[in-house]
Image (cartoon, rainbow, N blue to C red; front, side, top):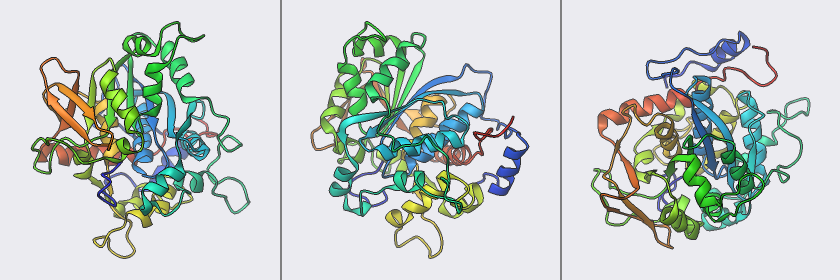
Length: 385
């Protein structure tokens, strides 16, 4: 997401071409960066899909990487306790031809109202998830088809996480966390059940090989390590869970700090070209709905704002960790304070690292994220291959 002290913090083909490609059922060509011969990375995506649209951009990247044969989206879990997050994710997944991906919802977690009350720049508790998933076409049908209902009947997130992990080979899953830590902290405390006799800690240790997480702040704009980061959005609203997560998660953790995504921005001026109008793509609709929140004095009139790539960085590292987009800090330990700030202490035996990057990496990484997030679906739901 973003630092709480900041209000806001392509080269992809035009949408007309995208629709033509989808109609002809042609998978977009792979770039030189893609290596489909690799075993697809098994991904669980945990998100607070409600306020900041980088969550949606990040999910679009996961779908693009699956279309390229690099990933397999196993499940999506929402850490914002609002049914509209489920309906939006469902509509989004169906747009990309993956309406069968299971979606879980946190219960008794951080609500949209709590987020809006704490951070007044959101304006109201009606976020883009509700607006886009309920948007209507001229004939009165849903603009972006989804499962009927308000999303409140979705499975409990922890139960879905346990079911999903239990079905995977040992050491095969990458968990990408781009929201509150509620679901994953509760997963670690869960007991054995019908899906697995293992408790949550043991289940994660057996099935997960990496947690790629967007949260905290670890360096200044010059890349110099911070003694202590400022409070950061993904940590602030459920700091106790974040603290438990970083204290006890049993596998390697790589964190993307606020400073990484803040230094790379999707160009708002490219949205029309890359996604098309708001009635053509749920990402375009979400971007436009949220535009008023993130505009600054530097945003020219009539042009959409440039958006930070916070959550996209954790997707790119989680699925392409060896492709040179980022460097890594020394190993160590990340700790979270109850005010939502983070601190990293180096240690040879630590399981935690954070992303670092230089200017050359930054240019290449932004280009890759922009291209992936705007890649047209290989197969829209309801279309024929």
